[in-house]
Length: 207
Length: 189
Image (cartoon, rainbow over the protein chains, first blue to last red):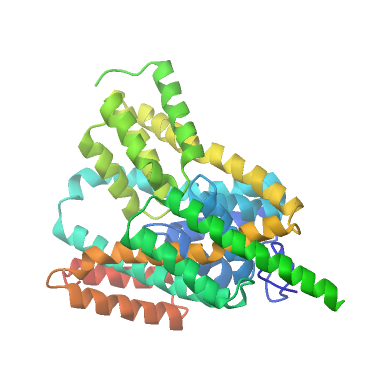
């Protein structure tokens, strides 16, 4: 079975155990949300895939891709996708609740406290330092996901090209995401489609 | 600032609901339009309040998109009370999260039903290299400002060290965060 292609690969690897209850789903998303400083996405991979092993890395990467392409906060979309797959609409709602409930309380308290502390240099320094850890976390996640691309149906060289072009467009040229997704994304999906069809034809002629 | 009418609150919620469906790339991509609406057009927030709403949400744990709750909070407290602040926070957050979540729910169910179709498979697998590149881009854009000034080298080394720890050990992230906060507060990075 090819993990890159199976969207329901949650059952493909015996080492993975999807959440068994709504409660587990709620706490899983609450915990990852509370660890997410400066964004939650990078923590998600560490918490859900490495610690809890809810699904294989390849399936996660695909869910993430969908969550990014659709409008809306990426991590909320990811929660909806994973929650819905586990427990339907209730699962999706529980994931959203887990993501937002506790952080919302904390951000409210911070807002109340903020006015008195915002200009203290040590506070700003601490925020900078935490920002660097966020960078390290994102890099680590990116490398791990890049390794998962080795089994991509389009081939490694294709992934390097599509990824490299995207990086240049976003990080160097600072182009709007929508246009980058439309241009590079459609080329990338077109090529992937070709490779999938080819593989299907090859498998049929083998059989 | 003046009190808000019921239709003002409804307008606030509707505006964020529309933005929800336009926010490809996440909540941060519609920030310019929020600024236009809240600060320039309606005058419900000051420039300072708008900026600190975005910054403060980066500090707090949780999804970045919580900055919209802070905007709503400030709109409400400007209008008179912390209760209105809570109302504003809920309206803005629900407005920005629910419509897109519903769209995601419907889209992924459709994709799940048609998951063996080559087109659906290509759409999902074709975007995965871009996702990795977007992550790398985010890391680069966050790191770049720290690589200037006298602490540039220290910041770079600290990031490498943190990558090593996160890659090699299963140490809980909050400890690494604490270390980052410490070296930052000491002014070393």
